Length: 102
Image (tube, rainbow, N blue to C red):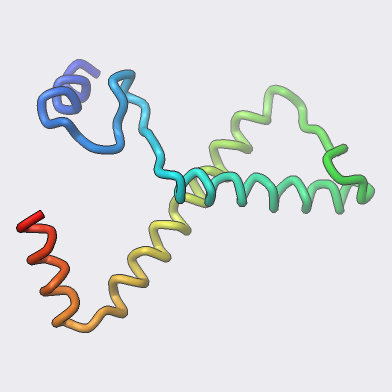
């Protein structure tokens, strides 16, 4: 933990807070929230159809939320990688030069 804290501090790593928890962009938060909403709608449909009335045992809620968040972040990253893979070589070169000169 001390090594991670030192790396985050000294390298100024983006996406990590001083408490060593990741920070998320608005797009990442949106993806996670959309995943939560889809899961709740599905649970409500299976639980009788009353929106927002399906509840989960408190011991399992954190595990469900972590799984949904992880899946949604992975899906979001896959979409970003898919976009980058579709770029033609000249566009990727231009992007690299832009980032290098940033």
